[in-house]
Length: 344
Image (cartoon, one colour):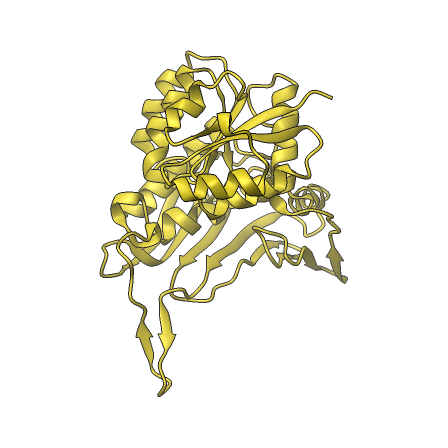
């Protein structure tokens, strides 16, 4: 069976998840990696049994490697733009870690070059490949909670404050090199976490009849900033042409969890863990009450890599629904950009 030969650029935590997932896929394999950290290269080479000829300390060497079919860009989002352009110019298939860029302008500039090339592109919102989200779409299309009215979606965890010996909260010491709190690396809760509930808002709103995803209004924008000038606790209301509303939240200081609550005129649907499916539980409250557990044998990253590789082998230029294609990424980044800049 033909397989997709993947290369990964950037060998941080997400790269480890992707590499482990590729070990279980039926249609792809990890062939090469690129990093400026030789220690990480050696670790990947050993753990994933990689040929030294496909382990590079220069990103473009991996992109130029003829044996590599597709590139997963796993570096901080501030570095995505130039690498995407390099992959486009070499006609490499692209899967880029979310968020695709740090702002809308970068993505619009990429679009100019991308539209002239006939290549595959997808943004790595892994939750859109999990069996859980497919079941949610199925249930909502069956009108299990009636006409869709609104939703609330959170992604937040307290990673900034800790309690001292006396029980008082103190702020943890932030390392300047930590990308989450580094403005120049595209840090902040909105870019790192907020992109998830925004993308899910677009997906759920699209299930409602006559909703214009481009006719939106943002309100109740709240952004609290830390001492490194990135947002650490942010909130947003998205109004889809007065037909559907979504309330989203992203935080580094509050344990908001990963729950999504979708409201219809005859009930509610709650996704316990919207992003990783751990646990994969869907609660429905309408005239009846029931709880569904979605069985899955693999991690959410496995489903992403299996599905994306399948699309590539089928010579498709965009991933199958409900994955994020280029136009979806543009719309998602448009909202994120306005949230970041307090634009309505």
